[in-house]
Length: 292
Image 1 (spheres, rainbow, N blue to C red):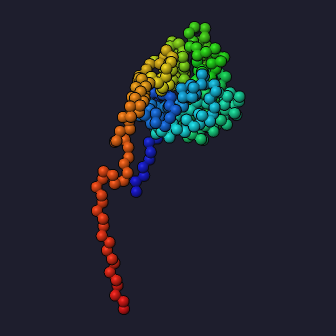
Image 2: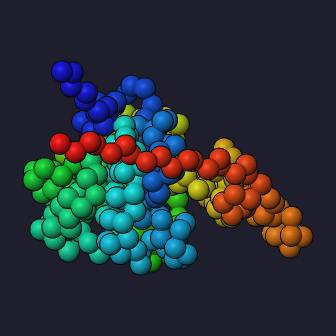
Image 3: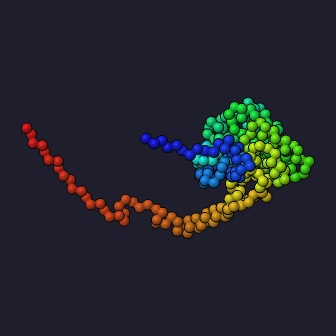
């Protein structure tokens, strides 16, 4: 009897081992069907709390609840087979203390079967990163522009545009790496600083609005597909899906109003209509068995 093993997923150590090697490819994903498509091309999929803005209409990521991350995380894990699935810890679920962070991160991993979580913050979160990693939870860090801090930062502002800011950001990168993070996202960061950090720390850097010199890149899927109406400067639109959806829905609406949809090929007839009738079968009697 042969035993068939399913394809092994990428794991956090696999991503960590790509430091300085082939560039790491990543996208956000929030649904099972997009996860299945992206799984063919990506090394990891991030269930980002950006889903609050992209899918649920929030003005920032701050209002996103943990339950929403768990629900979308389950869908992405079900839809993918090969890529590592990383789930964002939303605002308010990890900052209070390492113990609170562990409780919520453990819930996310148990209820979604994901492979890692992501936390925003550098030096202020280093202790928490170490606490989680020591207890079996792989952590991806996130520094530079941290969207959950938008109310403190005063908006979505690029980081490291002046050299006097560099030392603090470099220290953030060094401390999360020393704490045990397997990778770190560098968001909206001046390219020379991102390149400098990439060369100075032993874990992969994942750029989003950072530098092509990072160890990998990530974008919000809806942004790069052309579904989002307003996108940051660092987004390249690799598709125009938004326009295609608009045209398709317009064509559908026109055909409904013209009563040309549904056409006969899209409807069902009653049984027997326009179909040859089945030939009746003759009833046969079972021969009697002679009595003894």
